[in-house]
Length: 541
Image 1 (cartoon, rainbow, N blue to C red):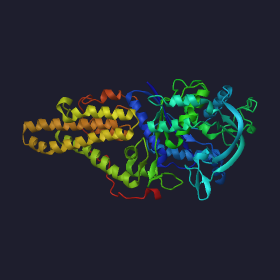
Image 2: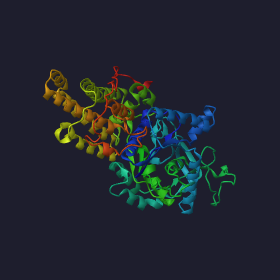
Image 3: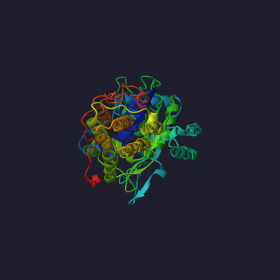
Image 4: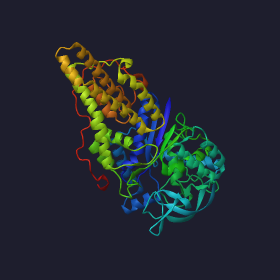
């Protein structure tokens, strides 16, 4: 099965915060899980690089816009590499094939009669683009964009090309009303239905003048504005940044080289933040239909990371640095805590204190201690990992299949916090099993020659090692390095490559006892060293 998933592309104006990369971490986990299932996956993420503000910022720093975004993109790629993000393509809106795709979309909508010339008059956010009158706020005597506090809006009046969104009102309402909805969670679908039912206004898809942007490909009479040598006539203007940015998903699917984006289009899953839901769930499907293409199969809308009730952002100064988090928690620790601490379907309050508490409680204490105790006791008593009992004879084996089903169900619904929560409930069961079975007492009795204790010790430790194997396997999309390390401790070869490919289907090796007996046990080592300092104002760094 082919599976194409994307994140929103990040605005390349600064170093990313953890809140910026949160959805990328989540998408990477979904991509890894899909690969481990045996799907043929294409995972796309990247950067949005055209805007008036970027051109202004570059000039202020004495740089060309391209040199400016190159430097910022390098910061994104470095932070994502530290977090083990494994995209099949990191797309940039400055990529040549993306320019071709955006221009082709303009041509198709023009041919369909869905774009026309008009005059735009209204607010413009240098960081984001045109704002509706009901999408601005008053702050300090000025009008600002709610997503970019402190940045004054500009009042613009200019002649632009418009997209005829109003022509798609009935089709959008029908599309959004499907069950199951293509936009999820359901309450986010309902927000978009409410917006559509209020009546849709056409929106601008071009800007006058300026050179930082994808050249608009047609003149007012419909003739091509692109010269035979591939250069453009600047008098035709540029493609509006939001219209261009959305098209990156098609570019990543191979459009327009393959006119339908086959075999990857339509996208199986777009993962986006709630602040850009309108662009993706209303504007984007209409743009695709206008071009003769299908709408995405599913759009997942997550919430914001909050600090003291406010959205985390660079402009507010209340962000967490992902590089600092990786330095303290490791890549796997950071990935796990981000997905476990913040629900993937709504807003979540987060702080450095809460991150460290979660890391210490669930990784250092619960799971790390379970693996350490199980492998240490097993290596002292057996040269090779003892096999688990049949699931029907083991309390943990009997519980595993239900845990696995619930975890997979949560993953399929993009409820990543619930996926890890189900697995960590099983971690708790395994730790209680250690306390109730007291393998240290069984080991002492076995050493004294008690054959019943020796048999019980083998069964107990076999069950615990199998529990560690399975938890590591199903948590691997969040903690890929740790999962492979645990399998090595258990005397097993990790069957997947660095991105989760080229191994057996997850459900084949994910059943209790499915992997057979383990081999020579490795030397136990702390997987998650406890962080002693639990209070740190990371936002102030």
